[in-house]
Image (cartoon, rainbow, N blue to C red; front, side, top):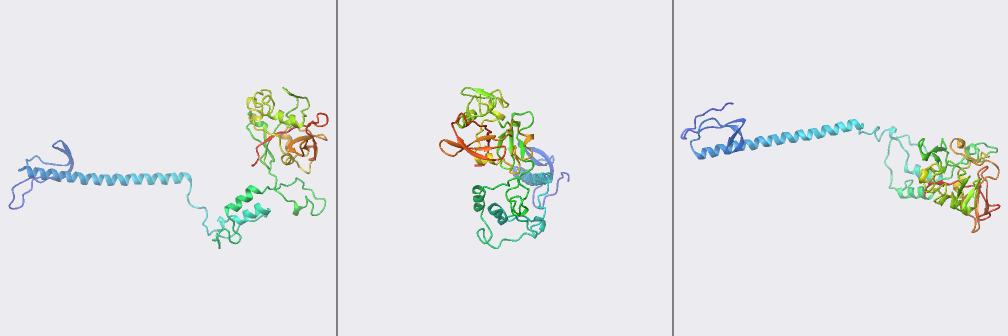
Length: 351
């Protein structure tokens, strides 16, 4: 609507009416919304009323703009969230709780597997609410499960799969223990890195040196050996000495350079159980699992190929494990004549 003059109501002087058109005009150095036609106001009071009316229009217009802008902002945020959800995939469950497709193991299944090794199948029906609290019936608390995880050491299979008598270790129904992974061993580092000299046993998580006779042809202050054999006390010196081939930070003669063998310096002498964990009781010369040839070097396979362990039998004797067939015995720790054997350091392991 364009600006125009209208007749005043009866009994009033003529004045101008303001048409509310959205066009900025300046009144006393202020920008307001509306358009005042070119007539003069008859009184200052009328002029003041006109200005107040225009300013009121401006406030209403600003409120409308604010509402519109707020709506646009919320709409943009909602669209952004919808786009993010679309990129991340559906936020809905693949199956309803009442569907058999949502089947899973129960806490009782997990508890029994950790406790007694009992295997269980996933339930086949839909989800049902438990009949009681965590300690009622067959339910278990997370604390109870954590106790099993941290305090129960699982026993692995022996490796023997041949049966020579019913109910012996290799017999089908009694072949107990944690199944061996395939592959049993894997290289820790990428090709071309020092970490290729670290070999992980995927059954126990222990990491072993690729070189199973690390002390052979080694010479440094206080130690020298062409065959790699040493006394029990010398074994610890070979591993810990800063000039040695294992954790030696000054060593530059073996792969791993200044950071120790295989790029790390936390190697240690394995205990008796750890060294025996490498054994496959169906093999001999050496008694190692299938696949060892592709990851280890310098493995001693002859008879009486004993390796020191960190496990003492007494103050003067320590246990050894024979890699050739998994046998073990004790020997004097200091016997330089009949007590020099190989070492095969490891690292890692659960605590």
